[in-house]
Structures are given as structure tokens and as C-alpha cells.
Length: 98
Ligand SMILES: [Zn+2]
Ligand SMILES: [Zn+2]
Image (cartoon, rainbow, N blue to C red; front, side):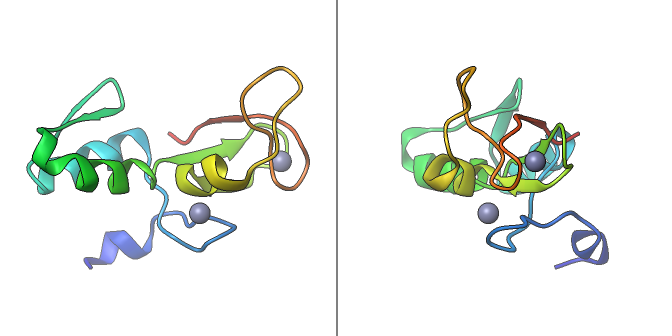
């Protein structure tokens, strides 16, 4: 991993790298995948790699500022009363990490 990789934010739950919108795009391009509007577009044969990378999309809580990866949020975050997923710590909602 390069130096700027270590400067990136980490998921507060699993410790994995969380990617910003730009970070996702760069990581996907490096692996020969395309990104359109923050969604990875890949051929069927690369679907697994694309899915694995999407799980590293970062989300930040709008209240406490905690950052989490999409994999953790999808797998374990509690539901928010207004729909979507709620913060593990404070129950507020997330926005995409910029
Ligand atoms: Zn995580
Ligand atoms: Zn929170």
C-alpha cells in the first residue's frame, strides 16, 4: 500500500479502509473497473471484485462524525426511524464520506 493509503479514514467498527467518492473511483480504476455516480460498473466476471470494493465505501454520521464502511452498515447497522440505516453509536443517519 502507498503512503496516502495510510492517511485514509478507517471504519470505526471493522478497522477497514473507508473510501471517499473520489477514493472509490481511483481504487476502481486501478483495478480496471468503471464508476458511474458512485456505483461500480463491471462485467459479470468482475462482479465479486466490484462488490468487495463497494463494501469499502465510507459513510459518516451526521451527528457524531463516526465513519463506517458500507459492509458493516449493511451487515449490522440498526434501522433509522426515517428509513435507511442508523449510526452504530448515536442512532443518527449517515452521509456519504466526501
Ligand atoms: Zn467496517
Ligand atoms: Zn453517530
